[in-house]
Amino acid sequence: MLPTKIYEPLPYSYMLAGCISMVVIPSLLGLLSGMLLFLAGALVWIVRSEHRREDDVFAERKNGPVPFWVYELLPFVCLLSAVAIFILPFSQFYYPSAFILLIVGIQLWLTRNMQRRHRPALFNQLS
Image (tube, rainbow, N blue to C red; front, side):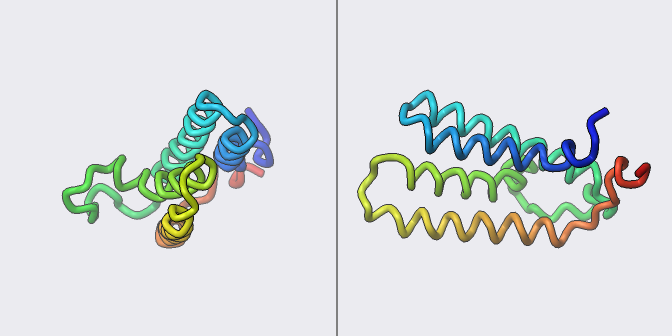
């Protein structure tokens, strides 16, 4: 068992390591590996969030016609797209779009995080 201080920030550290990898390694392989690491952190965050939810998620699913994983990955895809646009050698005219994607991704992520009722982590209950 990992201690809580290591276990809880793991998805965020995966995403941060992915962003750092995309910035530091100036190649297509660095960009792709950073994107995969970022998405791995996003998937861990989504799975933990779904597992800790107290509200009846399946009875009140309000995604509409959007599939579950598309709905859940949307803020992370917005953030990842914004970082990729800033890193890739596109024209500077793409930067406003990247900034808008960054703001939308952060807003969606924070809104979903605040709207979900989570029970405390098992490790927090035992400590």
